[in-house]
Image 1 (cartoon, rainbow over the protein chains, first blue to last red):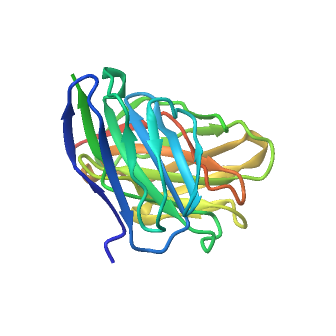
Image 2: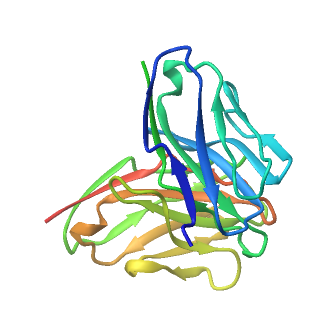
Length: 114
Length: 113
């Protein structure tokens, strides 16, 4: 049971490039989400999904797209990278089977946009 | 979204000192409360959580937190810290049956040997 996995661990992009951050979980969790972590700002929710085929925006969705075609995978796409998107990105999953909706986090992707 | 405030940005302690990190949230209704820890270079791990019952919650590694509803607070404590407690600590809140977590800005704790 690998939990939540993310690839790549590190990525450097030039301004304007696009890329996809991968996230997968093997716990059959319905809920998946993407956060970005910036110094002094904690974690902010980018997008989330409550099940396959259902996604919604979080607090800071601009510049990012998501889709959820399977329960296991929840990729995050950067359409045209900007330096303001330099951050550490965390994927998380959860399930209503947990009474407090505890979320399990992946190891993170450190993205630098130059 | 909830507003979560962590009062200390950076705390520096010596080993064996006691630790208390403050956390306040804005929502007046029922909430679930969490403390997560992020050790250097690692992902977030759950330290402890509160969603009902005894307001004094015990977590892993000797940490505990007390929920005080009247003060909208959920402070984290450890009586005697170790060098290995050096990490960043995040308080987080959600409403019941809502997956979305709101995080505080985090507190960096440095424990000197």
